[in-house]
Image (cartoon, rainbow, N blue to C red; front, side, top):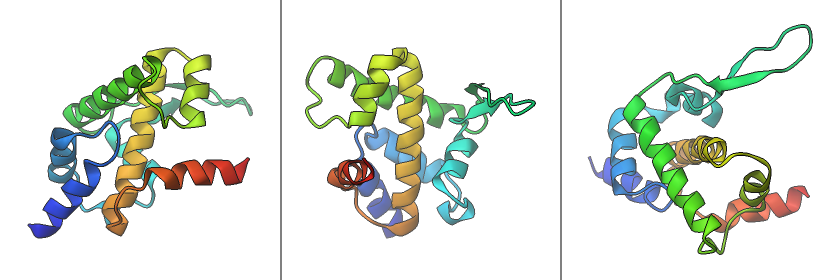
Length: 145
């Protein structure tokens, strides 16, 4: 029980995951170690695009909508709140990835993509027991460039 409380408090530090989202994630997710990666966890939630590839052409469609609908909705709502802050100029520490996506893609698509990213970060925190560090993602982005 204490590990669930620690995990929940760690998840609430992720932008877009409030206390309700963290509680739902802890309660509805099976053991995080059952998923091989964050992508598999996001796919379990239904936040990854369907694959309509053929003859060497990669074509990604809408999200699969597998998994728990309520948990997916909470993550997308949290991502939408983060996007609203960024678009109103209140998101001072927005990642370059997010700003670029907002310039290129429709807001609802960006919200689902951000929810996917939030799910992957949440999986990592649940598996390792680490605390969320917002600067780690930004420094990793800067090193890749």
